[in-house]
View 1: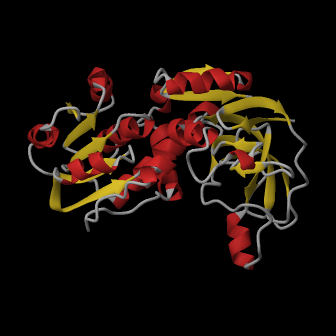
View 2: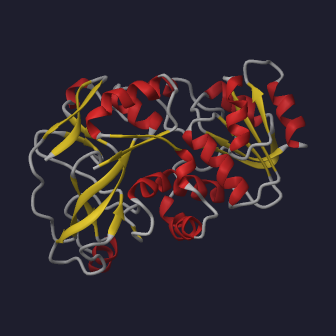
View 3: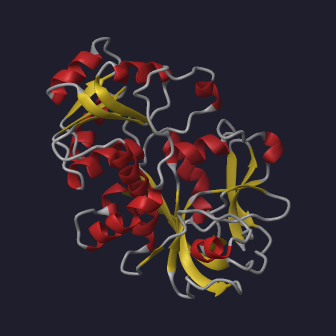
Length: 336
């Protein structure tokens, strides 16, 4: 079979790898039907500047945004079924490091419910994101839902609510998803995006923001408060920048919450985030938002297609990373 392999830091290719083993007791073997790039995380891991990835880990498998169809079950699986569509299959193989490994032709998901009931050690990774969704949602839309689920769960944790005021820092896929979900699902009254590329103003308003402020201007926090009509109830910080986080805290109400969503690069980690009690949760639990987002997709309230800018073949993985680095793509989906 084939998978995306980082041969050396900064180089990822689609190539032959060993076939997967038989599924373990609580595992389902999954034929992967689509995967997508998580723009910042996958790029930074490929470049060995995130999550401790180094040249010594190469070759390693990549990818955590994947979906597929279950084709075989381990003997202890009882809540998963052959034929079901399931999110986030992962892959580990002898001789390869694995940063999830979802960019492959085959992978594994876990019957988490059965494993927890039995109190038995799992064979392989057990992820809360191993969740089933109906085939009425296409594979391309399914992988796009992973980001939207993460974002909704995070906005819930920040108590973004109907009538509230939200500041979003950064306008990559996560920042745009925060605007979109806060507007279409949660009913926020005012949403402002702060970023360093003013040419993105039209795009962010198209995804639900009311205004864009340029962080290159020294008075951007004052402009953000004015555009919000008051202090922000919540900040979704998607850049990992300590200076931008410090500026965003001046926009935040005393009883508000700033969520540091971004996975910080090795370079950013040397610059600690401000010590402020309003800096809140890190790491959204996407599983909490699964049912809400599946229902919203099926009834048309949420349109994953809006986020997909490119559909590509796995062999084009190198070009896809180039598009991400050039900021020419929002969500790239690969079909198998």
